[in-house]
Length: 116
Image (cartoon, rainbow, N blue to C red; front, side, top):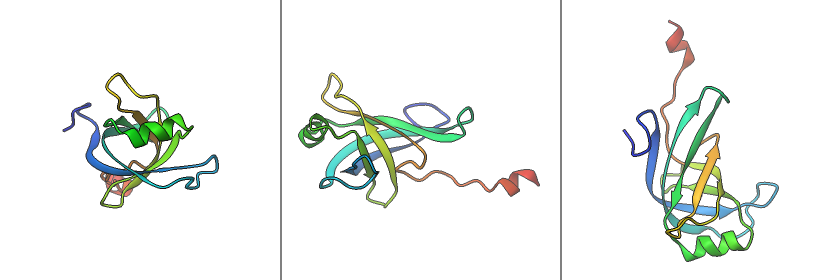
């Protein structure tokens, strides 16, 4: 199913990153990037966890070096989730992770269907 783990959903493609301030409000102009993220529901914490990497981008690195950590990640289809940037890896891309709504579609489950 994905390149990360068999029980995970994933997204690979273009995204827009909007830097967020400490209150979760946009704090700078959006930045275009390519990413590969995947996630899964965590039964231990009761939330959805997702993580992955951004392709090398001078704009993302400049934002990170200026102190940006929280970003709103939005796909061209309009799916969005809030993530946290980490320091660039050896190849120049930035790891990113988040919890809660991911920036890609996930299957919806109606619990009443499981109880019948």
